[in-house]
Length: 406
Length: 163
Image (tube, rainbow over all chains, first blue to last red; front, side):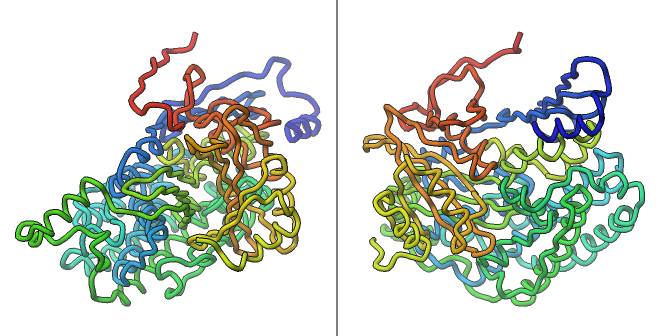
């Protein structure tokens, strides 16, 4: 690596008159938060070469999808980024709807925005919380874990019936409408739980000299490199590139909300933290506006090709029963073609490339997980730095093995 | 579905590369061009550098196995331009007996792992790739699991601790 040679030239010689040491981190290591493996070649404490390895959590998502119906794929998408599974559900449903040419109802679009932004907040909370634990700031972890738990208990569980593996969207709509009192509860949680938690962590960290000196300049990347390496999401925006698909390729009803896209300057760990903190505040703004504007009406399209018939019809009419049977056994019938649909997930661009040959199931599904290029960029972020910084950087780019390995 | 008026991106590509653009369509609003695999690096470099196109992001690369068709495999690139805010999908077919295509790492360095994944899953070989190894599967794994003729239920021995 040219960078390493430059580093060595600058440093004169290697620190130690010995062979570089190989240090293996993972795949089961408390600081990797998932089954990742990093092989670091060290000279003293300096990383000369870093080799990431993964695949330990590969669950054959794409192979399984090819053997399932369109609706059966939805639960598989939960397991991609399991920290914000609702976003994967939304991204997948949007991709299939693009292929079908279905326009979902307005209420459905608003609800999808709400669940996406809630997921973004809890995803960023997990990222910041665990990142801080790794570099020794345990308190923030608890300050962020509590509101996350409140969101799960009071909003996501009543909505979907389950915490993590939500499978909430359907092709052409949602599993069901919001339960009674959900909107008020959502306002309460945002105001009484999330906002104070962000303020607490902000007060503890943002101007904290220990934190800033620990993270500033650690794992920095310049915008040109970040683009060439396919970085998206907070890691790209921290480098100063204001790419946010919610603004740039606006989907759902994001064009109706007033929100800002925060960017950083240096692309280092500190900037990634700052960008995430600000994004949470912006997400709160979006949630606030979406709750105000939330229209009444159905959540599912009025189209028997995509939506299951009402239970009453299934039990009382032969057509309803047959329709239900065909839906469940053969799946939703989707026309032939290929689409790529991208959404702005918590970590960056979550893309679904779907090939259909017509019929009830996909011919091919490829997920473009935002973590994949981010993890690929780890050597670039870490080589030449210290081994202790590796952990800080790994936490701040937020690798989720579920979507990395699929 | 066939488009009457090719979009700006596709029109530029056709103008510059002529017969090497095998087919184009804009179904579902996604501009798509199927190109000759021999000129993939040239085409990608043009897409990245042309001032009207500026595809600086390579978002995704994958393979598709069209078993029973000839040529059998397809390599699919999804590109995005930060400045122009447009997207394009570039596809190139590679035959089963010679599943080789040039690596586009010189154009977008971030395509490294995507190419490794396509190799791992489909057995497509990327010429001049510096490190074409398996990425999700383990080294001892036999076959390429996303090929359509790889049975879903096939079991392979799990590997123990390396000596």
